[in-house]
Length: 102
Image (cartoon, rainbow, N blue to C red; front, top):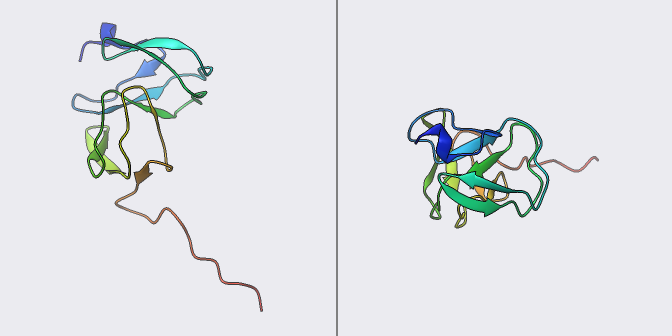
């Protein structure tokens, strides 16, 4: 993907990635180019947070740095925020069981 197709506030780390990483904080309702298509952020995007470069199906691998980092737990649309509410790690649990104090 050519860098001119994606807003410079986003970083595509490797060819084949299906997410981009924010280089800075980007406010909600900001319109930007993602993979050559104009999208409007539904929520603020913090530094280092991810958005989808294309539609991602439930169960599909999330790819960052050219490597899978988890899988989609729900459909993720182009430009949508990608985080633990719609991704499950393949390497560590998303929740930790905590025992009640005696």
